[in-house]
Image (cartoon, rainbow, N blue to C red; front, side, top):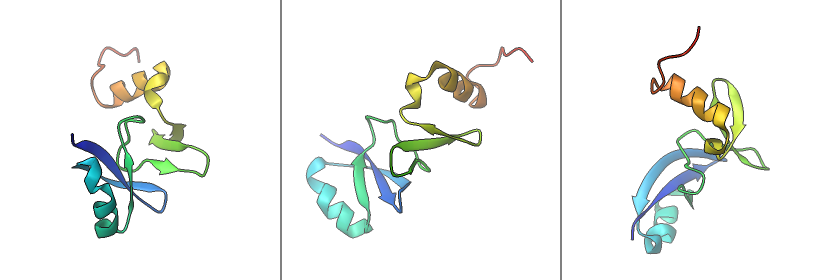
Length: 89
């Protein structure tokens, strides 16, 4: 079954691709990059590995992944994406 993989270069997720697990090694060679299963951390383009953990820039702050586990961060992202519109000013 195909999976979603993060294409990693220089500790940054540069792209996301879908391929079969048996194609990962071939794709890594073709892309000159490391592929990592994107699902467990819900990785996105621009995510960064700081040497200790994966992070995502959320409104200018490097936030550790998975951010879905943090209710405040999840709410902030929903507001930024327009999924929550009834926000007190």
